[in-house]
Image 1 (cartoon, rainbow, N blue to C red):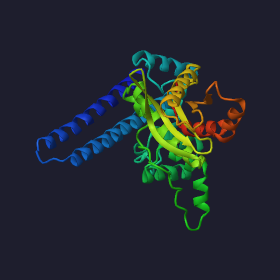
Image 2 (image 1 turned 180 degrees about the vertical axis):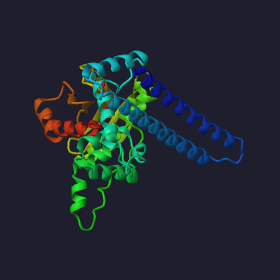
Image 3 (image 1 turned 45 degrees about the vertical axis):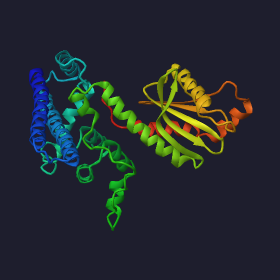
Length: 358
């Protein structure tokens, strides 16, 4: 049993490598043509990335289906249970150290996935066209086969990422659609759409380093928070992203820098992926001092900083202000700056997407 699952894992990764090599060959053919433009190469790169992610997703879903099928059949045996599943999970960890998603909960999810759709001819050909995170959301929240069919089809049609699908499910779109005589269109997604196959489970499956995943997530977090702050307060004027200050010949970048017209001061935002650490305050104080010395104009008030830490089930927002500020000015800053609870709720919304289970 365990050997079959390990073979499924290895075969899936081999398919991914084959797909990449095929795309590289296409690229090499074009590179031999002297008339190739940058636009041609950009198109090839974009298509290759999309195709590679789709292929990996297909292999991943097929693997989960086959694992679920094996477990479902094994469940007919009297020895099947939590202890049996834990034994399999431990052996998988020994074969693939650090692999995510193959603990007890993950294996039971694969079993449920197979048993939910086995024999359902409507969706068996569609299952590999959406991400595993989307499948988990649909299985946990859709109450009937018809509702599951609806959201699977919607994901494919609209190319929904996990976060975009969650938004539609939480808005009760299926119920509203069924009650509407005019058949409502799905609520539009604001801003840039996420890649529907850029899923955390795919990143784990192809062994992308943790720093790559965090960098990608952090970049999206900064962009969304920038848009939210501009919507939240009309007094905020955006200055720059990754704003550089120089101290002692070294460059340091601030994630987001705004000017607040009401407070007449610079407002720096630092966004961190993970739990809050006390040293983040010292670093922000360092940035604020640099801003006050180099960028603040004479008539402006001291700069202020906000530290936003995004971790699953643990969102923290902290203010950082100059120690020389008067209590009255501190109170005025806190009155006009975004409320910490509002920012924490927004952080929770941004990070509340399906994550890999340890």
